[in-house]
Length: 300
Image 1 (cartoon, rainbow, N blue to C red):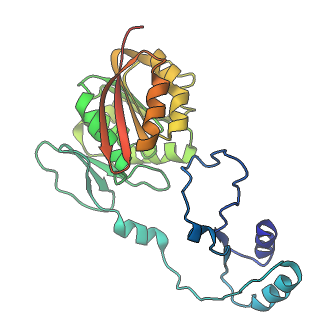
Image 2: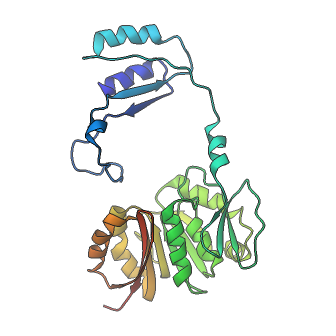
Image 3: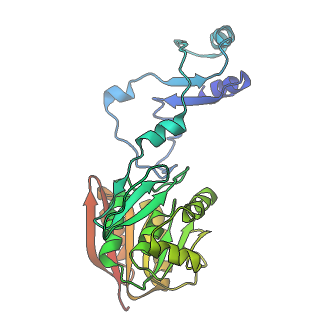
């Protein structure tokens, strides 16, 4: 009934429908629909009743709902109506987005906050919009530490799944001579391009002004022919494996492949997939349940 109820809610002018506790909804196979790791639910969680939360700006719909539900809905149901205070969710989110020290040299700063840069630090200024990469997720923190550990001044870098551009900016700040950020999401590329204008760090600005820091829409490394000394990718494991062949093609011998977005229990699978390619293990950077890993390109 979820689809039918949602359709009726939209007919009555709903501004949104939220589904809760429908654990079998969209779960018709082992397919990973949204690239998410399925949660292991307890028996008590499985017994929770299904909830559909429908949001309206008006408050004169209750009678219509009662009549329709009595005719259409099978089984027992409870209809509850609650008034909610309107909030500025974007502003609320911004209030919780704080300055983040990624490493001893890199600091991510929200565009709307000020920060006094300390000697030896590089500041990355971000307005995330709807893109991933604020610096507060464990994967971003660990992969930035990995970049700092292996990037040499003058390296050419490709950032796959660039999001806001945070890893591209980090690479530029640490001395990369050329950086290319790629993302399949058009909005992410737009966000990264907009963030270019906010940067004040000298190393980053030099690459921006000389057109050696760029972002473009692309499917992973498909059809990319720009060689690299370092390829970094902070995306889901089942997507990471699709780029190993192209990464092998583009990386110079001795170059590094840094992979993030990996849950600890998915690491063995990634390591197994990489055994068929000319890479050797270098290091791992774990934090909480996540880990970023570094491999070096070797000759076949």
